[in-house]
Length: 610
Ligand code: F6R
Image (tube, rainbow, N blue to C red; front, side, top):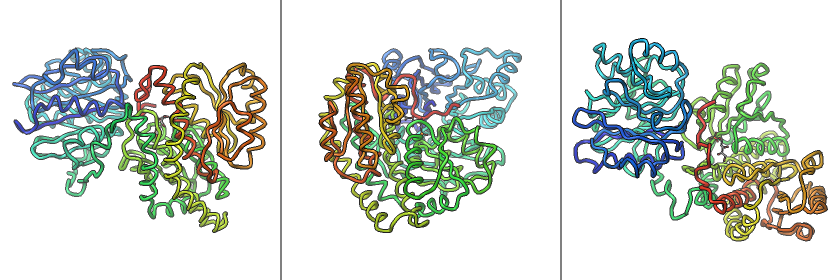
């Protein structure tokens, strides 16, 4: 939930390492922005500057760039233990100020460790779980252990999830690290090395990376990287782990857009094209896993769950395969029924969402096979899955998922078409037609965004003044409506609910009065007549009706107050063509209400806490 970063360099190799770390933290701020801090080693002392607030605000107060030293660690926090405050901001130090530490994750046994340390005379300054590690390291240093041994000893006591970076004054050119369940990447430079929660943090400085795996510990110096398994002591052969990142730092920056979210909405045609280009033989392997499964479960959280509902629709309606979709945090209800032969499809853009990861682990333990759909190579969920199909959306910095949703849908449709081909559930010519449509999808999305952005902005002028809104659809329109409502809720802070349109008459319609906004997702499918009836019902209650409709649906234009006409295509690709319009509506509504859509309150990009 937090972002950590560290750099250590030879004297003069990088000008102002602290400034570099501040900039790295800006790229990690999407992981949390409750507080921020830096620590370095300088002239045999630990220097710490930290405080509550976003990086820019705290930097203005503290001048991070002025932190001296060639070995610097930094942290941006999303609070879990202890409220956002100056004291709870990382880095945390021990009693003797000989250790500083940054951490992403949750130390489950911290209370027990803290009590023991307090009994030994340690004094704690924060309410965080993290601080125990600094004191534990100090404890072992005081017992005479060498710094790296003391670090390892301390880590061996920790239960829970962690990506940790620590500096110790007696080793001024070294950053120690350890990882379990939270991401940690090393960036390898010439005369300097980085460590961070995510690649974009240091991409401006190096593209050579090594992904640290669970239960690995080690250290970086300006010229050396050492990694070993905490339990077995097996040393990692770096030449086998080294990877080269082809995407650039610019790709991760805003590229002229006012917000990452808008940039990422506009990136969708490219992300979809790259995802199509990246489809390989794993599609057939995935399709085989699906058609051979005893039962197919689908799990995910948030937007990825909506992609899961799209997959549920595809598998049922195209390949004739019944599925059980479940929200990841609710997995426990199903656990006892899971058996060998079952398949769990886990969808997670980050590959690190703890709820989804826990569902994967429990299902796996009970003999289910795991198929992952993810955007982040080597992240936790892909690593623990039998097979992963990757989306190629590139880094998504805006907290709200946009391009990662549409690319998830794309790989789902490609996989289901393959499954339908293998189990002969759909006509060969229909499959070929749909594949052609899939090929054209990036172009249709591009055209739709270009054609409607200004109009959607004008609708946002109305929507942003409302307190509540309904999104209604039928069939495949339901998950699209759910995704639209989630976007409006999470970034514009407008209450929004999605319903199957038929269900609206069984309760929700009671709230509808004059000018209550109701947005309809109208697809070119067998539901159009019924949904026209639903629009008319809402109109009769004087609702303000907005519709995303196929461009040739004249009869809808006459009833709707506002129609957004989507170019003609098969309704099965609608989650990719309609959703960008809903993303834009939420984006412009948020901006008009004065909110920062990239950093919605109370939310973090990757939720690594259950
Ligand atoms: C909403 C959003 C979240 C994520 C959810 C799952 O815009 O971004 O609802 O979709 O936290 O995240 P991943 O896909 O990384 O597992």
